[in-house]
Length: 134
Image 1: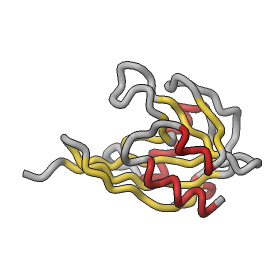
Image 2: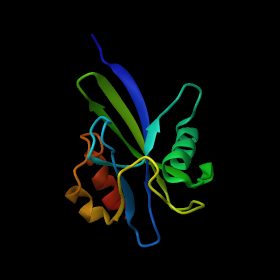
Image 3: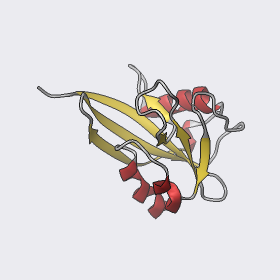
């Protein structure tokens, strides 16, 4: 039997100093305590870009325009009960102040320091792509 496919889209917000925003997953959620790139599940009828615009507003309180989202790479990872397909976008421009609305903590991290933060298995392979970009 094949596992169900779950599409989750993630965003690497990059500040003027070339640091990437990661967020700590809250207690009570799957993989609580691990650090992730902000984003979320693509809902029926949504494009990945629409999902990110919605999720970044909900999770971080910022407004992102679709033109500021650039696809970088993706992860494909088999978890025990589903298969995750996760496109990663890069965003360098947004409106508003980034704040943790759903996460325990946020951190602005240099790409070469991302491995110092424990991440879900699907997120870790994205790090070299960010390091190469920045």
